[in-house]
Length: 130
Image (cartoon, rainbow, N blue to C red; front, side):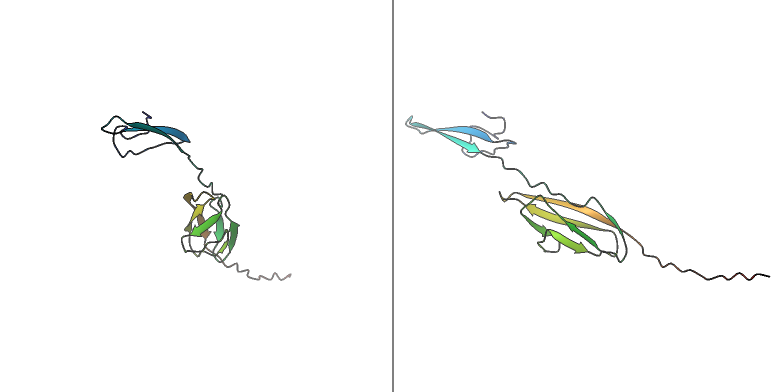
């Protein structure tokens, strides 16, 4: 039996595989009749999402980015775009689920660090010559 089978002699088995594998299943009844069936389980690839690499912005700024690596996307807020523009007011994590053409899903996230905004004030000083 394959090492990925939970128990080869049970009528229902659990299979754990990491690559495409062909199994042969033999069945016999109480009368000695037997049949064998070959069944191939194909392991399909997961999407490989490409997200921003933990960017930093200043409070009040916008960040526009595109996620790639899947055929469809769903963000934690329910939006389904690959392009996004965000304006977080504090450091935040954004999570997306990507689905590929095989309907395989993967979830990934990235953190946007937000630095506080500041106001620059310049005071005028006058020098008088004597």
